[in-house]
Image (cartoon, rainbow, N blue to C red; front, side, top):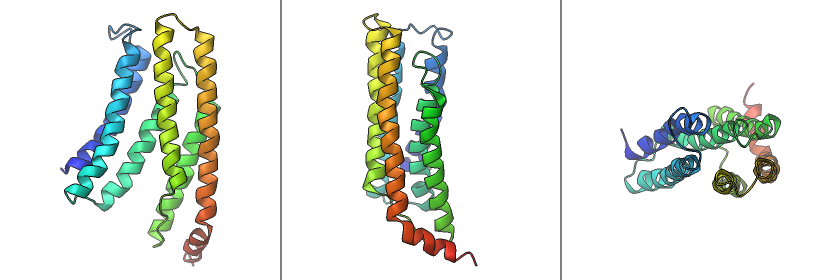
Length: 197
């Protein structure tokens, strides 16, 4: 199996481990003060693998159609899974807020796939790349906030309130990036749907 593809699939495999450590750290004998550091390590591995899979794909000429599909899919799975995980446990994000990320990624991914099947490629936009960066920053910020919380420097209400606003701002931009993507590609989308008949 190609190196780039292994790294991409590795990110997807890490998702359940993140969830298990976050929700069941006490059952696993992990202290609450150690837990955020382990989660940060897992997230850092995911982000580094995201950077390196593209590097290896280009350097070793391993760019494949499967890789082009799996790479953004893996990114979406990792970040959406983490946000969904944060609807439980310490952070307790509102589920409706997190569903914004699920719906946006589902709509764009489905549309890109359908257009591709009709021979129309919808290129990624800079707004989408910035969206991914903001989501990663939001997740890292929440995990860093968990460190002073586990040391009793900030209250549960405080970490939940700050986390909510961090994710709220990120969700707003996520929606705007989706609207910008649809607007920019509106002609290509219309063209692809004309090919149905």
